[in-house]
Image (cartoon, rainbow, N blue to C red; front, side, top):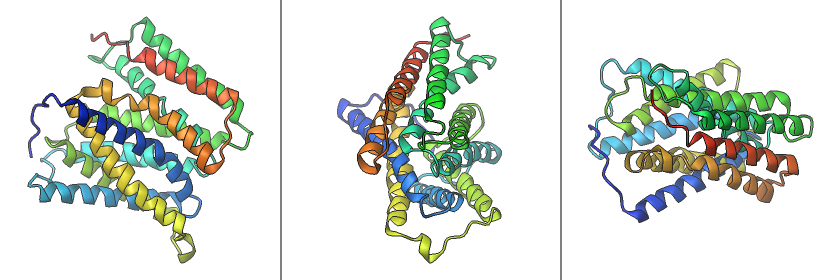
Amino acid sequence: MESKEPRAAAAWPVVLALVTVYICWSTTYLAIKIGVKDLPPGLFGGIRVTTAGICLLSILRLAGGRILPEPGTWRGLFVVGTLLFVGGNGLITLAERTVDSGLAAILVATVPLWMALMESMTPGGERLRWIGWLGQFLGVGGVCLLFSSRIGSGHGNLSGIWLVMASAFCWSLGSFLQRRLSHGRSPYGQAGWHMVLGGVTMTLIGLLLGETIDQENLTRNAIAAFFYLLIVGSLLGFVAYVWLLRHVGTTIAGTYAYVNPILAVALGVAWDGEKIGTAMVAGLGVILAGVDRKSTRLNSS
């Protein structure tokens, strides 16, 4: 199914899609933390992402769309799928065994900063103006503030925090390459194959590392977290985000970077009793200020 030129959307579908992305993606951090308390991270993430990809491709096929990738696109699909779902999703799933969901959400808010830096270093990419570089330094300052205040506090150890940062970098690189590698015409078909290829790879890694799922792992909370992430995070949230990208562009769709960490922190405190202190609030504010400065950077070469 070939993509068509995006049409201007009415206000209410845009608001509905935005609210869907805000709620779905801000709640996934806590759901991941609940799931990895009982399930091994590789199999928990890999099976879920693979299943979501199969569901999306099946829905696309039933709607009459093309699901087989065009010739020559497999390598791009595999590279991006691996970066997004093994590096991005897989590393944060592993990290949340030792890192609070709210802290993970704040660190993932650095994704727009990583993407801006990648653009500025690429020939033909968008160049950062001085205010954009100010945003980069603010974002790094916020991360350093969180590092200094949270390590050894019981809310995130050093290795877990580095895993979250690596996850944010992989997601940024995967998103960056998605615009530059050949993937075919259908954005929903691309998304489905990214999930299938990335999910299968993550599952294989989990099996090679000796992960297994026993009866004792299948607790009520773990099963609920699995299906919540499958339906709400991987299907509803992602489809709403792709729709926003095609109808209102990255500026409006990307506002999730401001909203999600705030909601995720509040949810972690309310549901799981996570602690929040002055340094955490300050770090969140500095990172979001950096993202805001980044959004004014545009100066194409």
